[in-house]
Structure formats: C-alpha cells, structure tokens
Length: 439
Image (cartoon, rainbow, N blue to C red):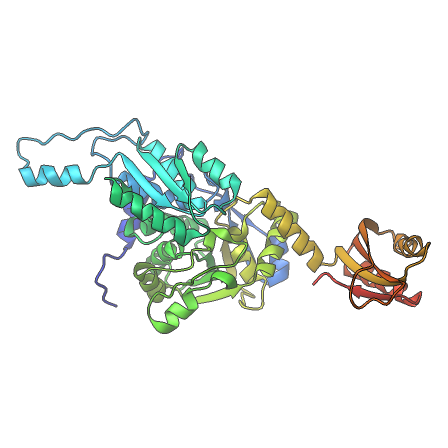
C-alpha cells in the first residue's frame, strides 16, 4: 500500500528502543499467566502488565521517543537540560539552521489522562517544559498525577476533541512543539517497543489482543509483529461507545465520532488518523468491540482473580477474550493491560455495575398496602436468607399506586444470583408483587 505520509518500520521501533534504554523512564514490564482466564477461555492466557509502567500506562514510550528527537544532540538521557548546539567549522549555515529548528524547550499535548502523564514524565526527564491540555471531565487522579510529573495542566472543554483544539491553538501562538497522542510516526514507533517486549516475553504466542483508541499503540505493536512473528494474529479492541475503526476500515478513511460514551476514557479518542488506519489495515487481522458492561466485568475479574487494578482501557483486551466476540480456544494468547490509572470514583461505578450484573447487589421494589409492620415483615423475609439490607426507601408517590399503597425499594447485598432468586421467590410466595429493578 502506498501512502503520501511517513510510515513506521521495524527499524524505527528498534531505534526507539535504543532511546528508551533507561529503566527510570521505561521499564520492561512483567508477563504473568492467568489460570483463571485459562479456564474461562480454554486458552493459555498471558497478561502483559504494562499498567505497572512508571506512569501507569504505555504512553511514556511514544512521548519520550518523540521528545528525545527534539532536544539538542548533547542532551543526556538523564534530562539535565537542553544544551545549545554550536555549529562546527564544517557545518553550513543551512545545516546549523536546521539543527536549531529541531530543538525545543517546550512541548504541548492534549490528553484525557494517560498520554498527559507520559508526556509530562518524558519532558521532565529531558529538561523540557510541558503544557498539557485536558478536558474538564478528566479524572482528578490523572490531572493530579500529570502535574506531579512536572507539567502545567490546562483544563478545557468536555472531551478530547475540545482539548485537542485548544492545544493546537497554544502551539500556533508559541514556538512549542506539539506531541500528538497517536498521529505521529515517532509516537507509533515508541509504542511499538512494547511489541518487541511482548514477542520476547512469549515468542510462541498465537494471538495478541490490544486496545485501540487513536490506534498508535496497536499500529506500533502490529508493525513489530509483522516482521518478528507474521503468523501471530493481531486483534484490536474498541469500546462500543467509542468505536471508530470498524467503520473507518469499511469506508477506507478515518471516521470520527462527534461524541463518545464509554467508561474506558483511555481509548475514548473518537477517531484515528490516516497514519494509524493505514498501519491497522496493513498489519491488524481483526478488530472487535466490547460494551462497557463487558469492560466492567473484566475490571472486576482482574481485581478478584489476577489481583490487578486496571482502568477501562486496560481491561478492554480481557473483556474481548471472555466475550462472545473473540474465539481463542486452544491458543496461546497475550492480552495487553495497557493502563492502570483507575479513578476511585470510576472504580466505585464499575463495582456497582458489575456487582449488580452478578446480582450480588440486588435492588427490589415491593408493592405493599401502606400499613404498619409491612417493612418489618419483608425485611424479615430477606434476613431469613442471610442477606444484608443496605438501604430501604418508602415511596407513596408513584403514579401506578392506588390510594393506600406504597413501594418499598430495597438495596440488598447477596452472595449471588442463586440467593437473589431465592429472596425474590420468598417475597412473592408471601403474596407481594416484587420487581427486580437492577436494570
């Protein structure tokens, strides 16, 4: 396939790994076998723990590779500052001018969170100032972490596209360099170093599963595997509320969404680029989508079984392999846990959703004659099953109620679906109309 823009090669990825040869910037993250996922999928499942990276995600790889190419030739990997290059006697004036233009002392980026932290750490390590534009809806933990890595943070708009537009304006107004989250060969090559690691970790892998936001991560990883192990199946995963790649592949051009709706904010870019779409077309075998409910279940599964805390984007690959969308039975699979920056408010939301889905958190609406003793009677029926009532609300205002009737809304902790159904059956057997209102 011929393109009118610079693409990415395995040589670019190898060069990026040389630049990233500093454990204080990027470390080789571990891989662990998950016997629980083995049982669920019928495969040998390995988890690539990239959420244990210094910033909690893979994003530092691309950001450092990009920014390192901006700084002066004399800059050290330890980031002591940007040195001023001096032309040698043999350099022409044009060569000196070109070298000067490649240097910068300030970078700007737009991000919902993980790219922000990667750019902030990379810039600080390389002695470069950074300004990161984040949407006002970005998780506070990610905003605080980005500032903690040394960046100036500006909160603008309600989504990634708003933040991107403002970041572009900042670049136009200054001499800063823009560090795109995915639409840049240097970013893609940096993320591709993760593909080199995954192959080295599990060289016999049959399928790798990688989350997709803007496509930079899977583009780099797939490019690496196209040479190292072309027989390995590369599968991308998007959240249904932010899925742009399937439509883009079908139409042969990047398609953007006006808005996104997913708990996986790390892959909620709402679009891909010509660069990343072309690499996906060339090197990715399959793209599947998963719902927020499936992502929430994967987060909870990883918490319980693998003892790993990952965010929505980080759990997307696991959500795919335990869904009906992807068959990996009998294969050796590596699922990438790309990010672990899970906001505690989002964790609470995910837990409530996942526990409700399992019926371990049960909401019941019981229609009663509004007389004394009814709440006590129904509470006793629930207690007879050793379930714990968290809350109860008395409602007389519902339009479907007759005069003298009321609803009792219970929120109950149960051991699971079996106990939940037994409670509902017991209440009905005592003559009450009861509705399971979790949905």
